[in-house]
Length: 334
Image (cartoon, rainbow, N blue to C red; front, top):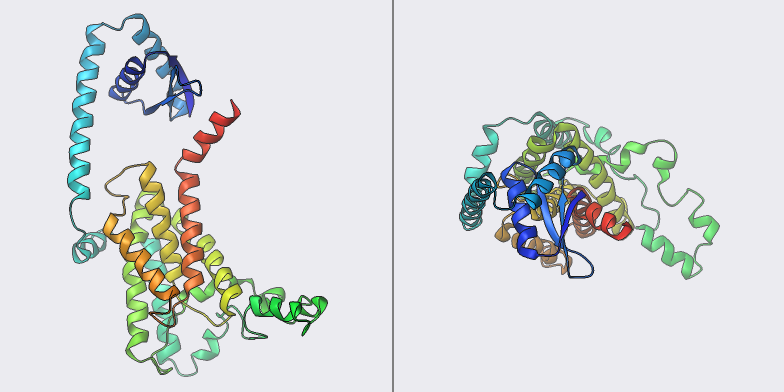
């Protein structure tokens, strides 16, 4: 963002912001550090020259009829947007309607990710000797000492020396040998119906894929397929690392990424209001409650640290992408 004007009168500063918005120039008005003046900031640098020209005209001719007309139109549009936003946030989210809405708009990257998860699950459950393939997707095949945390505890209790623990024989074993795909691939695996969990294996993959079908297209439609893939890869690796540190290498599931995509949309949408890129309050409450049910072991078998790590990674990415952090840093540096 770039500053286009500083005014001593708050009402005039907000009027200038409204005038620029009426001309299609996105901006925001904030008090200066001395609290006696107000700055008008333009979001898009490409609009900076036009904004400065119109700001100068506004200050030199504040009563010009064209300015009054633009202000009236801008205020009418803002009031209409606020009414629509209030109505939208007051509506409950019907998951069946949302599923149908997204299914009518095919998003190829989302569908590809769903397809990979389904293929891996089918191979694991129904292809003879399919687990000879899927065991290459775990974070590690070896469970030396359990989690990385347990290895560190063994070092502290002097059951292992520091050099032994970090020699490459106890952590990231295959990854250190070049099998770097294991950093990500656990997200594509889901509970098997043949390991004593029965219907839970079906619920696990259907639950995660339903959330991916809802959240994935929101990002893909707005930012593109490759940005969705980038988020899945980065958040997937971050959530897997968190889970590995906490519980060891034998974990699986897309839910850490689901929490990351949820966190990204939630935070980004707070600073960039858009009815098509928005997480309603009831969904936020549901996701937070679900995560804490797992943390307090009211729902066993959940990858709690993957959920927490993915959520934090997604929220940080959403905040960094929202423009709010960049704006604050520019204000601090000027």
